[in-house]
Image 1 (tube, rainbow, N blue to C red):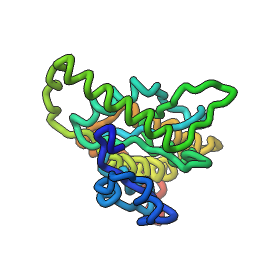
Image 2 (image 1 turned 30 degrees about the vertical axis):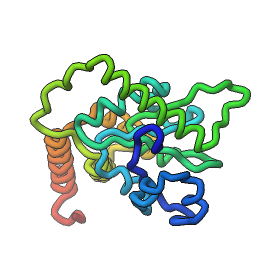
Image 3 (image 1 turned 45 degrees about the vertical axis):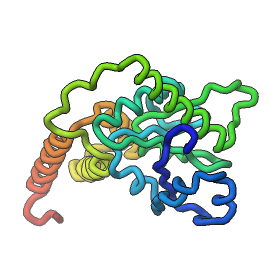
Length: 228
């Protein structure tokens, strides 16, 4: 990270940190370790982010947009004009779970050969850190045009999107939407639809207002004795 100009490191539920082996392997990048923030969950770690990409070695059952490293770097740097962006890596042995990938807007995949596709965590981080550095230098050298006008309303943060998803899931239950459909599958598809749309904060408020009205109408339809 440090050799590629990156310094914000967030760790989710690390087994051992701080740790002398981490200090030794940092090889002088002590400032990165000293500034690392610790979170209990990935959702908390990316709560303030406007764009989140998960690094995954293979396609999973979570249907989501997938970028190669160079395109991912461009997308992440573009997103930072509107707020923090995150590149998420999983565990050394098992990578990211499907549930963790669902917290991401998109995936990034390093296209290694199919018959020997595994990269260790350090190598994957270095590949993508280099792509971010290369793209950053290219934008400077090409005198990249200034970003467009700042939108009137900032994009929704990851935490606001999670609040929206929780409200949507409860609303679907309240209006008895599923009727034999698999709730988890429906919510996965709706999550990806809304993440692709990248609503701003005002749009999230409008959607949640619609959900609240739908819930109110469902309570009225059930009659005065219904539970709140």
